[in-house]
Image (cartoon, rainbow, N blue to C red; front, side, top):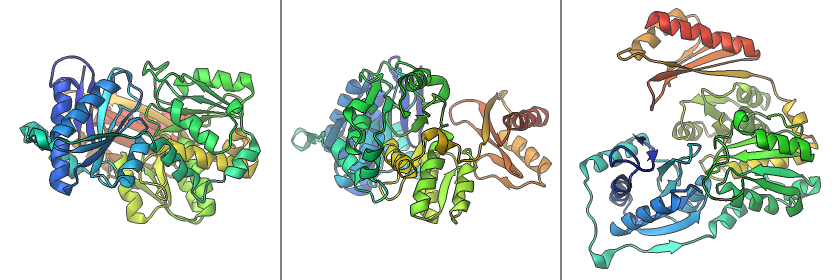
Length: 461
């Protein structure tokens, strides 16, 4: 059982002792801390909340709503929703902030409070630090009975979010409709079962051509909810056997996205952003950003379109900050996260689907043919457990010295470039490990680079 307190939110398992899990008492404490911080910072006593399809969702939702009301805060409750929908709603509602009740790709035992600012973006590191300090000190005061906040249930944001997507100049409904796509969606027993089919209908895909698997919103995830190849066997088999044009998989809160090709093979979660960026840049040239553990294929595509690529530290907040700094037109993360500033600064699987289908429709390619137009890179993802007392900073300095003849980036751990290959070393915020990601255009080379650096770490620690 676990409780993880980070600058961006609070996540933990359900059940167990207070202080060790996301218990009702901990939920109250951290909600009260966030609400108190928000009112003190903005003076705005309105908060938007929404939840994914987790089993614990109604329980956590009721506690969060009641706690915010007890602080005198009015709540706009979207009910079953998605992370990007809540982000959009915060701005539309002119709210002071928002709380998304989701543990993203974590298993069903987990839930979380993801905290947003008035821009519908995840709160900054400094803001998160202040919230945690308020929680630790229990420095909050509840209002008397005649000043309690109100609750407004509002299920209109599914439609509003989709309308905002279909109104984008980059989205061509007529082209998508004309292609008559046949699509299978893996909704992993969460809110993608509501939102993805509605989006597809709005894009002109016929109801008879949409099949949803794992579509009952019960939080009993039919498989590991992270949309990775090893978890998408059922979707792959159904696409291949049914003759569908593609498969679409999202995570429980619908901010990550990946595709399955018509032959059942994986398009590759790293290439979701690459493909969408290729389309966006073809219509709107500019700069791009992804975190430095993502494929270099995005850099290749950006340079092809005459733009500049910029890396960021890992984490959505860091990607968004870098995107704002360099005025990027598209960005995101290699885990299937698409961020389109023209809509909002947050990972959004729904806008990713709309842009991807438009691209396919306009190019008249199959999804497999489209994948064949991009360079093939392979990322080897590894981790190395640390012995107690290891000075990681010192180890990284020694490795940096050993590879001083190569370009090195120390913004987030240590990234070393070897011509067209690279390796990225960074510590985990939640485990005593070092993550080692290496990329090359040959799978064996990527694995060998990772193994070489793992050996360096063992020798230099």
